[in-house]
Image 1 (cartoon, rainbow, N blue to C red):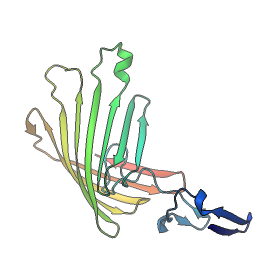
Image 2 (cartoon, helix red, strand yellow):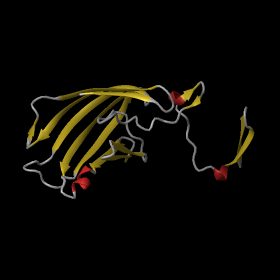
Image 3 (tube, rainbow, N blue to C red):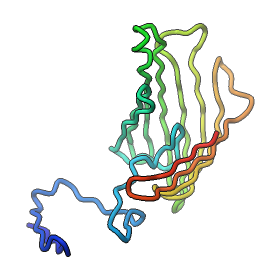
Image 4 (cartoon, helix red, strand yellow):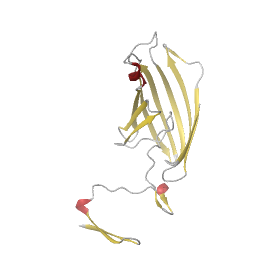
Length: 190
């Protein structure tokens, strides 16, 4: 009916099972000499691009960039997630802005230990028509080596606009290194 935890600094702690909402194991990569790190909340993406590490089912995030750009992500299944975003800069233009948005479905899998593969479609457009702009898309494939805290991703994609694919591919090399519980370094190179 209860768990008893023996703590060096707090003594004996008794927790009633009925009062515990959920329990989850701590990943080996988050177990450190000084204690435990919380799970990396941003392992599925870099600054703009994605890693092939999936967003966990039922988890999500909200990201704000430079005050004006907002995005949301949600893990639909173990391997499928979707993110979407919009800008609020147009609101400051007295309602006459283009109201830009994007949609980004992603599928990704762990194909071997510390090796992930995935792909996504990034679609961006405006609600209000600007000249002949009909939106643009990129179709991307990516490979990630590493874990949720430390990894590197190579991606290859093709742009699509005005009914045509770009003649040359878009290549990115990205990586992250988590150096403490609350600090990580991110690099994204296009």
